[in-house]
View 1 (cartoon, rainbow, N blue to C red):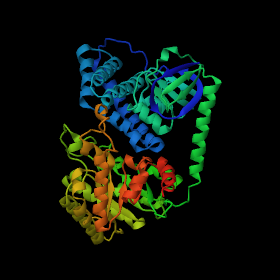
View 2 (view 1 turned 60 degrees about the horizontal axis):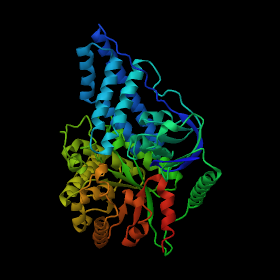
View 3 (view 1 turned 90 degrees about the horizontal axis):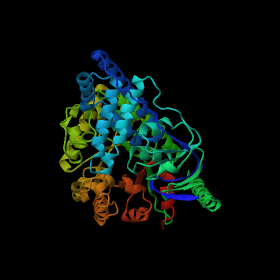
View 4 (view 1 turned 135 degrees about the horizontal axis):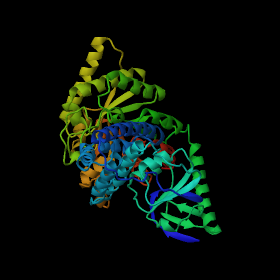
Length: 536
């Protein structure tokens, strides 16, 4: 037996045999061409087909792994359609008179090298997205299947794996991934975690062979080659203990989310697509505390019409069968641009035009969404929530738009319902104004992810400041207390919808502070219910 220490990329344990995965990008031969226009046309056709493929993969990923993980492919689509990528390929074909496949290969290597030279790990990890994109286009040019052979019931070992390969292998029985290069923040790792597949990175893969038996301990970030009986027994016992914990939690379905002292706490889910409603129901969510509506607006050339939005919201409300649904208005802009909105590039998107700022600047877009939400409210209990609030005036303007939308529906004789109005508390300004804001809304929902980055001046995407980004920081906990105090004075409820809400180490503290509801990823619902029911 040999123990190899690496880094955790995705939690979990797996024991099985190795399959060395070579990837699928074909060998690219340089050819000098005479008909440059033909190569340009071939590239354009393949690029358009690749974009359509990415759209399909994106939608499939939403259904299978959720909106947050699926955004990887939305980002890839933006890279593929970036003008500088296409210009590099076209200029290389024209200037050097080379075949399209070779030009695409060179572009992928060029931009991957640029990303790899970046100082922060998250940006460096995007080099694999560039390889994924170029490989997808090349496969179409060469008329080869970009997924390659799909090994089954094996632990996949490779130097590095792309997000596209992880998705291509999703229908097979992949037990775990072992890679030499990669990180916890890589897109492939994010997908593995979303799919519940253990993964370890930072391991020398040259010592693995096809058919070798290995044990992967994703929790500890280590791999055992030819594990002995003691290691096998220990890992299998941990797997069984985890299975039993999950089975025990399933018995909580249908029970109340209530503390030992009788305090009732609402337990809601965060979702970012209509497909995720099934998971909320399966995990016995008591409602939807955050419906991210960006999935309707991004990755398309035109704004969704009112009817499309209404049908989506209506479906979700009806599927929840009378349980509350909180719909967050569009949080778009900055790092989540839409082609159909004229917005200037920003050096610091997190501090730019996003959330309620974008909606108030684009009133037609905002009114269309508000009308669709009000129409859906005729089908069940719906609340509307405004993001990125920093002042009372922003809330007043947003509510004025909501009232105008209601009046327009009333005038047109279109069925609609009343909604409760809340805000995301995710800026220090909203915390400091919590008492004043509580007077003009019906509820607060604290978004701890953004609140932490804005308070601690630590970009949550920048791995170099991850030691600073601490949701448990005393300043964050004091801010939550202040928000609860402001809400209590006005008699309105407060929920937590950021990652901190799914952290069971602080659940008791948050409940004792006066948090009325938790809104978390559907897979965490029963774990949080279990924790709340143990609080005295």
